Amino acid sequence: MNDSPTTGLRVGIVCYPTFGGSGVVATELGKALAARGHEVHFITYNQPVRLGSFHPGVYYHEVEVSKYPLFEYPPYELVLTSKMVEVVQTHNLNLLHVHYAIPHASAAVNAKRILAEAGLTVPVVTTLHGTDITLLGKDASFKPVITHAINASDVVTTVSQSLKDDTIRLFEVSRDVEVVHNFVCPSHFERPPDLEFRSQLSPKGTPILCHVSNFRPVKRVLDVIDTFARVRAEREATLLMVGDGPDRGLAEVRCRELDLVQDVVFLGKVKNPIEPLLISDLLLLPSETESFGLVALEAMAAGVPVISSNVGGLPEVNVQEETGFLRDVGDVEGMAQDALSILDDRALRGFKQRAKARAAEFTVDRILPHYLDLYRRALDSSTS
Image (cartoon, rainbow, N blue to C red):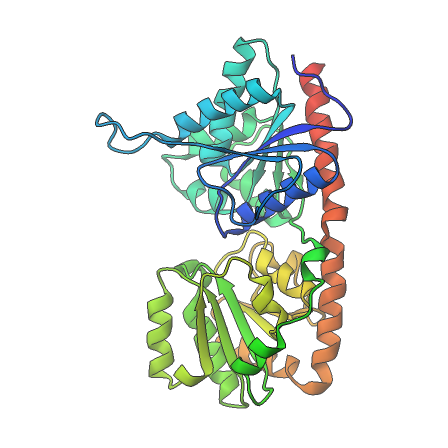
């Protein structure tokens, strides 16, 4: 049986290594744990994009999926399970913290059973991030597996109260679910904005509006363009579109239709969206759904107010008329009015200050102790 120390934990983190919020949060959590003397082992199919270069106490284990003629689709979950078993045994991990119900939590639950047969007790902490619940939860074919993965985990967290409510509503949950919000690392924002880049985008010093996403339909990027068109009709401004995805082409077409090509800049994928946020004046986030809205929190940490939809976890982050405004999904007219009111020179400074102050309530130093408490709770319950 693995020992369960109160300091110097050995934690396996399983996540998607991509630009998405879940991968970013999982990676920053691992780096924060290592900085405080814990040992962290990332287990995934690519090095996480936010991991960067060498970090003492951080290790990466690649999950390699071999292609066999027998399998039409590579069996990633099975290979992931085997890799988790291997890493736990080789490095004597104390626990596994997995992000997303499937395939990560379901694979971890299987790994836990295999390890138990070898005499190792390794608790599983599962963090639910959103689409594993709100999207896959509507697919009946996944529901039994997700339900089992949730109920068989030792600790389950969600990144917002809204997501917790959805989890309980959509699945037959027979256990407690804890809310642990996403976070930002203040040190990432302690850098000067790239004023040369800003001056290139806005030579006259006019406001810069920003949108950051994966350009999927749920992000409603056409609403971003339509909102900006209404703002641009009233005053000079620039729109910075950060990211890429299936709806980028539609957004570019809409810009041509509305004669906005000269005022909209598509940056494509950016490894660190904090850099464009630091030169922006306002974030537009009109998503159809957001389990938390990490980019909204990152914008606020950069001193950028937010115009967002009022769905999911966004109202838990963006405070109406303090850090920005909340509107119904699709209300581009209202969002444009709110944007113009924020961009008024007399109002902008106050919104920026309040956004930054609100983000300070979600720093890693405030959130990490919650995870550590849950880790120790999981360890204590697994040895009792």
